[in-house]
Length: 94
View 1: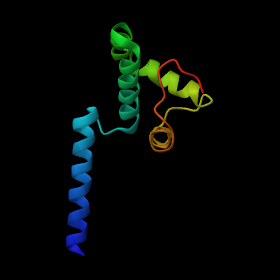
View 2: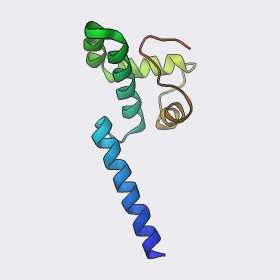
View 3: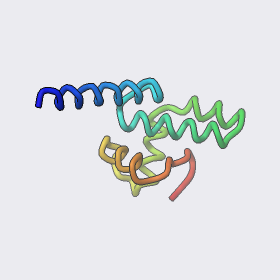
View 4: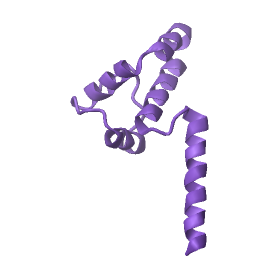
C-alpha cells in the first residue's frame, strides 16, 4: 500500500512539474489563458501575437466567461473547457 501511495505522489509531482514547465503554472485557468495566448500567436502573425501576449488575464477571463453564457470563470469551468472543448481563441464567439 505504501508503494502505491508513493507512486501516486511521484506521478502527481511529475505531472505538476510538466504543467509548470510547459505553461508556467499549474492553475487550470492559468493554463487555459496561456493556451489561448499561444493559439492567438499561432493564428495572429506578428502583430496579433504581440497583442495576444500583452492581453491581461482579466480580459481573457471576460472572453472565457462571454463564450460560456457569462458563467463565472472558476477552476471547475476551466477544467471542463480544457478537457472537453477545443481551446477558445481570443475574440472568437461560440
